[in-house]
Length: 356
Image (cartoon, rainbow, N blue to C red; front, side, top):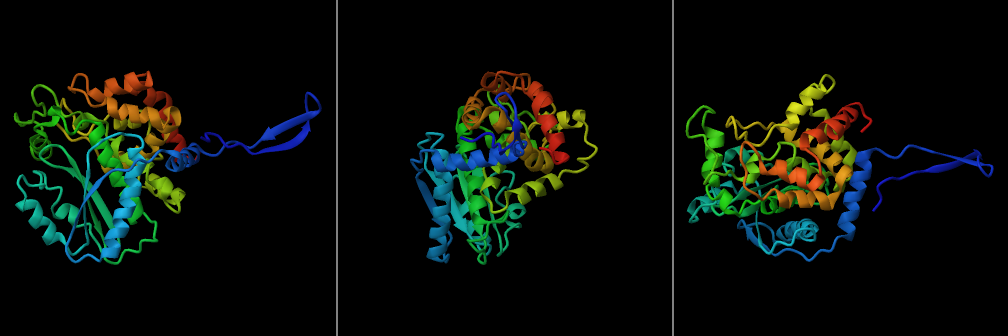
């Protein structure tokens, strides 16, 4: 796998009369994106079974096109994680909100969860000219992929809301859920945990995310990790990855004045603070900063080690010692905060200045 690309040119003589100079290697993110694309070409792809649920009235040819894209996207990850579970995939268009709400409320137990992932706040983003997707979990913690493919979407288009990129992003999340232990007894009360986290004030005495003395591991993960990881394995496959990456950097507020201490505080935030009970994540940390930090994590440690990290998160978690802290330490051989200071934060600052 290529990690560094050097273009050399002959200039003058040195030891035997010849001296060489070389241009600097391409930016880290370009090297990383090229490596991600190479993985897609080289990784063994056993495939993953997909249980397809389709809204009535969708044209068969569009359903087949969507299913093919998700099969390709999930096969990328099935070559890395040997999970036997079947993927549940629901496909609809922007006119099917009523159908979707009817089936989620009628099922027993329902797929609709207590903090309304499937309601208007999500479906409100559906448009005829774009594709959106999400992964939710049922009462057992089993992830389900749901996608809305606009009736006017051009499947040849490869922008941020294209069907191929959404398929890659959401498929990554499906494997993240399984790898990090969403289907374990640690998350047996996951719906109540999420309801409390999103709907109660931090000082409410019921705001205790622990189930049998331990919290769902993925609730204590850092804000930059899951969405940034999905972005990293999506953007390299766009027609213009440099533009999408540039858009993400543009979305970071006040990046010209962010200090190392500011960034350290942002990277230290978790999906749900097990000490204060607060939901600490923001869009900015989830996506733009998350993408950049995952680029550097990939560059420093590689794809296989990061996959090991995901699997290692599936352990009991607590406020005093979140499982992802231990997983980071055991997988990468250093404390996460040390890596932030030594590697991630300098890379962020360089990326803000265009040198990343």
